[in-house]
Length: 458
Ligand SMILES: *Cc1c(COP(=O)(O)O)cnc(C)c1O
Image 1 (cartoon, helix red, strand yellow):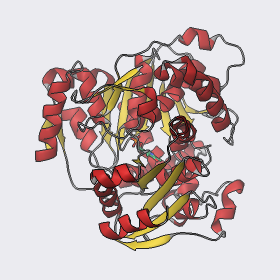
Image 2 (spheres, rainbow, N blue to C red):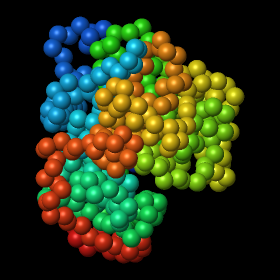
Image 3 (cartoon, protein in one colour):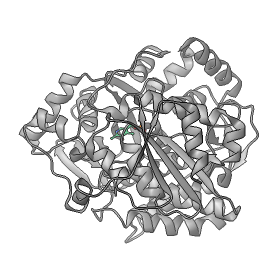
C-alpha cells in the first residue's frame, strides 16, 4: 500500500515510512492511495475471533504487505492483553436504541491507548529495521502525554520527551507521566500554557537541521496508523450489534477519532451517520453546518482534550469530499493558513452533510448530562463523553446510536464530582501513582532552552 499527500506535491511513501513520519513535506497529510475492502462477513463468522484479531486484520489492510502482518498481529495481541476488560471495547446499553462504547479500559484510561499501544511497538520495529533511533517530541494538555508515556516506555529504539504546561493539568494526568521509571522517557514542565508548549514543539520541528540531526519524530493523531487502529472499534461494534445501520456520536477535537469512523465506513461498516460533538471550541460544528471553516479563540472547558481550534485531520475529509482533488486542497489549506478561514465548495459540503451531523455543546449542558446520566442510568461519565451524549439529541429516538466514551470519569474527578455529586474512584491498579515519586524538569517558555535540553541528555 502506498500513501499520498492530501496536497499532492510530495512523493508517495510506503507503510513503513508512514509509521515514522509526521506531515508530508508539502504540509499535507498522508492518506492511503486507495481504499482496501474488508470482508466483514468473514470476520463475523470466524468463531472465537478476539478484538486483537480484528484490530490486526484492519491495520494489516493498510500495511498491504504480508511481511508486516506477523508483527502487526503479534503487537496487537500484546497490546490489547493489557486492557482491564477482556472485551477491550465493551458496549453498555443505556436506553432504547442507545449504547455507550467504553474506550477507557486501557493502560491510561483514555481511548488514545487503542492506537498508541499498537503504534509504539510498530514504530520501534520500523526504526529497528533501519537501524535507527528516534526522538519523539510531544506537547500534551493531558491524555496524549500519559498514553504516549505508557506506550513508548522502554521501546529500545525510541526516546520520548513530553512537555506539559506547568501547573495547568490535573494531578492525576501529571502523575501518570512523571511517575514513569523508564529511562527512555523525560518529562518537562514548561512555564507557560499548553499553547506555549505546543508552539515550542512546532518551532523545534520547523528547524529542519535540528530535526534531522536528532531524528525527531511525532506521534500525534495525524499519524495514519493511529486512525487505522481506531477504525477497528467501529467495526467491532458493527459486528457486535449487527444492525442494518448505525449512528456514532463522537467527542471531537482534532477530528482523528471521528475520521476513523469514516474509514470504517469505507471498509464496509454499516454506518449511517457520524455525529461530530464539540465543546465551546466549535470550529468543526460551524464548518459542517455552514460550510465556513474559520479559526476562533481557544476556550478552556472541562473537556480539555477537545479545546482545539484547528482540527488537523479535517483536511483528510476535505480531500475525500473534493473527489481527492489535491490541487484544490493545497490552495484551500494555504489560504486557510494565511487568512484563518476557508469556504467549503458547495458540492463538498453537500457530500459531507450526507454522512456527518455536528453539534456544539456548552458547559452547563455538559454538566447537566453528567448529572442526569448518573441519576437516571447510574452511569458516571467523563466530560468528553458527556459532550457526545448531549449531541445525540441530533439523532432520531429510534435511530440505533452508539456514543463513544473516550475517557474514564476518574481522569476528571473534580468536574464529575461537581456535576454529579459523586467522586469517581481511580481503578486500584493506578492508585500507586498518587504517592509515587515524580521525575520532571522545569524549563522556561524558551526555544533555546528547550533545544539545549533536548541535545544535552541524549
Ligand atoms: C483526544 C481526545 C478526544 C478528541 O479526539 P480527536 O481524535 O482529537 O477528535 C476526545 N476525548 C478524549 C478523552 C480525548 O483524550
